[in-house]
Length: 231
Image (tube, rainbow, N blue to C red; front, side, top):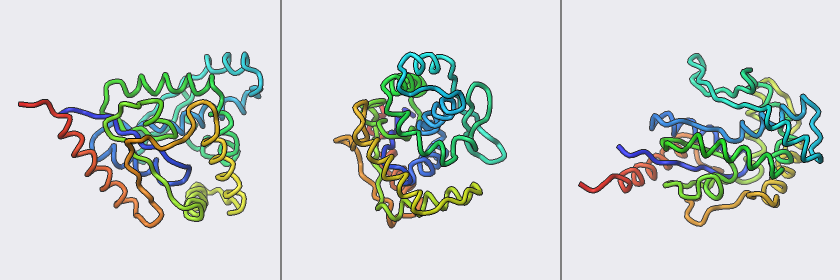
């Protein structure tokens, strides 16, 4: 059976990662969390006091960054490793969320991560979620999804997600963070967040996670059949 690339883009806290993980598991595809890659870079920059306004410092730092994903058998999930260390918990903190869009907007960071993401998806059979997967990383992806949800729903989901990680964050602070990230993501010069012309839009405001997964699996089945060689 031919394998395809499934690109899932959209705003923060729309359910992209949760949906992408389940879709990948159902199809036995690799799941690549590009947001985690940018978070890992942000974590490295903060830990090493990298000056974001110094292009040379940013370029030198990127040469020292190696990101991998390893499957955790116990939790049945992929975890992010930065230079050999598991940083999955660290990169989900609000201090990372506050800076990740700013770091992601840097052209050197964008270029470095896009190159790595293309290498990861070269053999196909991947589900990749992020901000510019269908428009910049894999513009020829066989299936493109653009996920959205209303702002209040996204804010509540992000607060719940943080609470599940034992992080109590005021809802107003979460809203400020999402507004800031939305602005940076949609206005940056380097591959801004936008809907690809051939993307299928899924509004997750009133849709359950299972329903989101089923929608994408249905679309994927059609694309996989279309991608099969003629007899």
